[in-house]
Length: 279
Image 1 (spheres, rainbow, N blue to C red):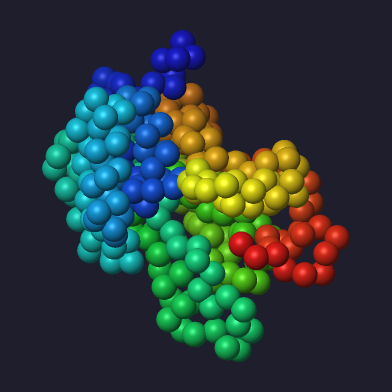
Image 2 (image 1 turned 90 degrees about the vertical axis):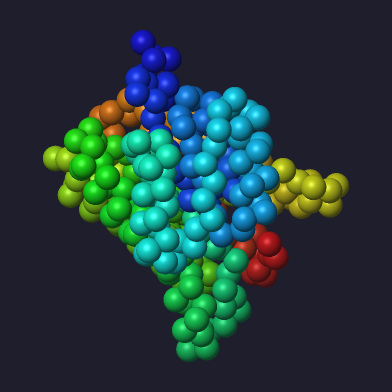
């Protein structure tokens, strides 16, 4: 019974879209959803990475994976992403809004020096895209008359101060609020909406001894004593996409190795130090 509730095999086989699915957390969530039995569509702006990940996921799952280059800042491209997926698979069941930019645009600038372009790009990619894709996906769920699941990805920066990335933290806080409100709005339409909040998670395995050492040094400030790995988000995504979470909606799931619970200072600060750490 438990294994059945976590399966996405169907019938009918569940169909999932993962934005920002070509690398990092999105790639690993896509992998886990595929291994759980879902048909997969991954989307991102970088076509070369997208194709490389498509090949990897096909080898892992034994099924064809749809890869659609998409700029999630565009409402039209978000709509087209969902329409092309439905055209290919005949349905949509799971919308994972993972695309984001967290490169600290405007880092180091005081509030009065922040550029409009840095603010707008950050809000559009991290928050607008969640709205665009959720709106079109929910319409598809309604048309299918079978409901669906929306999984949004926020960040621990939404739950604490984050001066180096003011726009990023604000956008991710908006994603959390959006999750709660849309969950209440869509409950009568059999659509569940939940949010994953990663923190202290490596986007990819360390590529050198120096990166291993840096990850170990950063991890020692975390409650768990280490940084998380991208694959560890996959099982949580499967749970939220499956019938195992059928009584869960409007919730926020923090996966950060106990960082927030341990009272760690804002990201970039070492406990007991007045200096900002790099990275």
